[in-house]
Length: 297
Image (cartoon, rainbow, N blue to C red; front, side, top):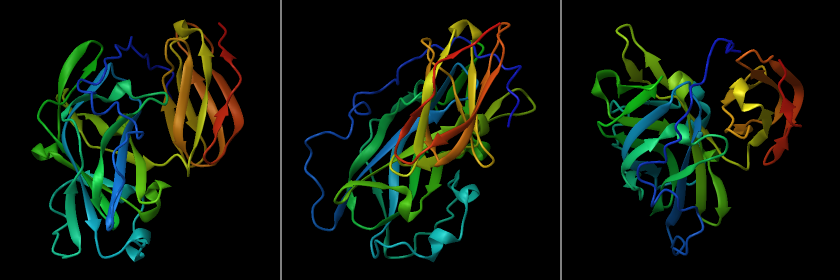
């Protein structure tokens, strides 16, 4: 587990997403459902927080690669692990298979403050009705207006070699089917690993994105006080680690956890003592709530 004792979380200016008119719509619209040979997709975005004031991504387009010849999983699902999940698009998919079709989803292009999406907050990044089939990849196209703010200083956020398209590879079971032909999933940006400070003091984006659904994962929430301790929360076990930064009222929520037993470590500042809770059981499709944690000096 990463040692967070010396990290201080600055006062977070929780800017709203720059363009939210479309994104704030949840999946409760009266739009018609998918027709024959169609399916409806909804892609939500959340954040596994990093130690910055703000992280702004200029998202211009979201597309999905669909194998229109099959709806079933195949051997390709079992021949890769999470380290193959995400990369910058370098034409790794030649798209010569006549069954494979790229289709665009509806999105309101704009600059999104990823750090506003924490403690259970999320936004509907993209959605729409597309051809029926196995969704193999998501492709996110970024514009040039990407930046971060750390300790009140703004820095440009560049990609290696000027790449602008992020590819996320999907498995067949990555989607929740909430109704017949209606699917959804969440993309969770792991900002601690996605943003790298290079030798000249600049920052580059090397995206690490976790894909999860609510039906197959669990959540862990609670409250930590006082806010003067600037607590940083780590939820971990032998295989997974996730972080949370509580709101000013102390409430926190970590989603997308695989079912199992976890420990919760509260890293406190300003003279308050750290605290650890152990043996917390997280169950699939359920919210586990801890008792209120009151930090002492």
